[in-house]
Length: 281
Length: 303
Picture 1: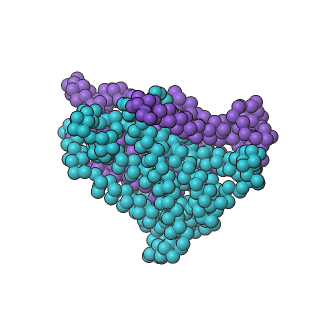
Picture 2: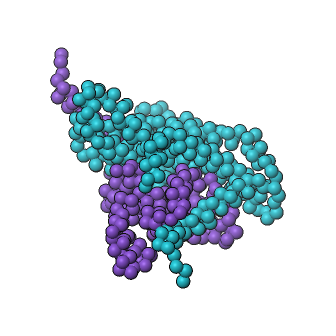
Picture 3: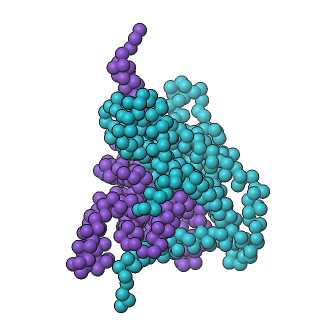
């Protein structure tokens, strides 16, 4: 029997959609179970798997707090660090990238090449030297040691440079100079407003990375009241919560849900932003 | 005030980055190198330089070599299937004959796990696969298993979970990058090839692959550097020591264990960090500079 080209295409398409649906289920089920279980009681969770939410969200929350896990505090700590890190990362990445794109100074190519190399360097392995240096400066157990390094975020500068290359309007900058604006004034009042969409995309990535960062905080922060959400998540595995599954899932969901909300609000920026640094138009 | 020539203002703009890099980037690396030649601990302020002793100890210690081997294996085992699925999806999504619907929605869903907090994801799988957890309940109640399995004590299963989680978190991002590279290729190239009588596979090998090479290198290098630093998931999935039987002991866990030992042996921890730092950087930079084509470099210089 001969199958026409047209029906072959349809058959192929059906197979692909089936494959995609299975992949979607694999992608979403762990996250969905996490959120649903945060609303179920420990008894319900132990009775079996369900994909429908229940009504124990608030009682799980009370159990969580009664065991000494200060979720609001961790939320506030994580938010503080993530917001400050985002602002510093975006501002200084734009500043650096504008210096490279806008001025033809000696050594700018070497600087840019150095930044590309830095993107490929596993800086995490210098954490011990970083820790010891911070403790000499008295900055361990302080958010400064988590936030200040973002002044020199190579990955963000790389992204910002690619972005500025694509939107740079030299005439506008020259016009600003003729009008007597200072160089920094041109950057603040002409360049940054044009670059807003790119800054926003960069900001989302910086925020998510800071929000999710476990390792650095784990090494540098020791006081319980300064713990960030990922650090609290880590304590959930301890004995205190052994049989409080509902509360554990709630703690996990609280760290994940804000990011899911951000994603659904700004997925267009995020999905387009991923390839921005890597693919040149 | 000092009068600068206009282009010299560039130095002022990049100065904060350079200072920040020297203080928070370069100096810590130098400090790690210095520390790796000492027997320094967190508990005592006196220390001495002991030459290459830390490194000799490392290479004599089988946990160190196990950690290196594990990290490479765990990375490769997730990278290969990740590329496979991402290639399949990006070819389907960009295919003009198939004209699949909702491409934007599919890839938006597939990317979502990448934004999840890795430590929360690890804690979730720890809970799902624990002895009294939902997975065991489901398998036993549905009769698929006679009795519950202690998943997290089985090396092969634990490794499989780490690989799966990594794959789950990253295949969406790789798909988006490949798609962006493929859609950037001018359709006229394929049209010309069709006129010349080229087949689908030939076009993929002769047009698509060479033109997406820069993105492939980008994916390879960033994934490698990220994979070599893997910590959150293997650390939080079991007991934080790479159990069972060191099966998911990675380089960063190994370094952390030295740092967090009862004495806080930061000299030895620095030595671990330094060796894997050099190993990863050398491999990443070699891949980048050897695979990058000459004309890319000249295009870079023109910018």
